[in-house]
Length: 323
Image (cartoon, rainbow, N blue to C red):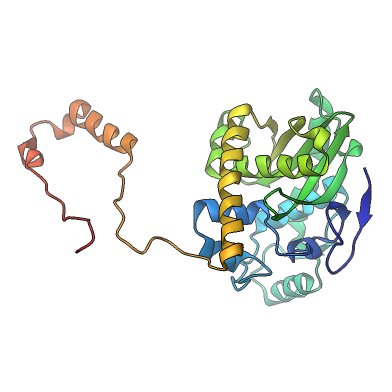
């Protein structure tokens, strides 16, 4: 596997690259490219939202100020992976003081990763725990065996340019493992992981990344495993390693197909539509209706209610467009 060093401007074509995060996020592809984050926006919101989020299209959305948990995550990534922005420690307990805010703003302007000293200590503890935990888990050799912060750029059969930045890429002969580190204040308890993956549409990332690797290395198509490392920012800095299962990858692949379809159509037609321009029928969740029905039959505090009022005919306004 050849890795090309790239520091600025557009890349010459598909391949594996090492580049600064700022260059990657500015989209260095020969044409505007699709990332997994923009694909999620296309799937879950609209092309209009995706257009504004893309650095080479609308690119007008104001970036939200990073939170302290996000800064801990950035520093932990740097400590774990050995790549990323330089860490700048700010000697303050919080950002309430003017000096701390100014130092933080200056660090971001210089392309660095600012972090408060107590948060730096949290990042160090989390990074150490993740390293030790991986050593204890079977088939998790750690990032010494990986290419870290590796960029892959490919062109899909639809003609769309795609790009990804992998926290870790481990080539094992005819098989490969993609690693992704997720740190936050949320619980990393195993029983919560499946729900967290679904709620944050992480299956899109897994399917998107494995698709791009398969395009560049066809021998790895269907032979690439995607794994997340979930770590908690606070003591005891618990860690769970999770692998995308067949159901997640299947749903993720279907969603990626939708994202690619919308992306290529919008680029071709040069239109980025928003939400529907007609009244939609809001589907009340079935689980919520069932929960209410259960309450009617089991909750003693609603006994004696005359439910006959709720059985009167309901005729909604005709939602068909006027002739």
